[in-house]
Length: 139
Image (tube, rainbow, N blue to C red; front, side, top):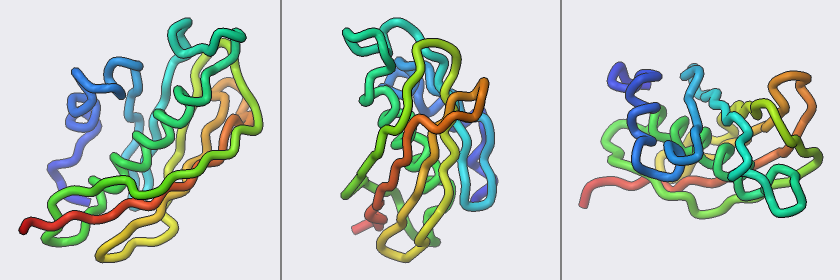
């Protein structure tokens, strides 16, 4: 992780893009980990009144993506997601959901991240998420 990556820089990064619009906030940058949260608002719910799966996936993907950025190999410029999967095992209607991303594979050309999304108030698992990131280098 480089010193240029701070909580403030990641939270500023989201302004004007989907993470900022939804209200995602980075809480912690760890060594090969990232924690972020999303307060549940009415626009994040599906028409059935439960948390929309897309809202959960966006939080998880953002946590994994920011973690990837904070842990790019030397010489790498950026990344792009090449695969993601989520299992939704719970839901919430109010409160805040928390995403904790942790590294599974830290390679030169790919990274794999797992993210556990929970209800912040009670620790109940909402979703398990895994994504593969392709590392991009300058041409």
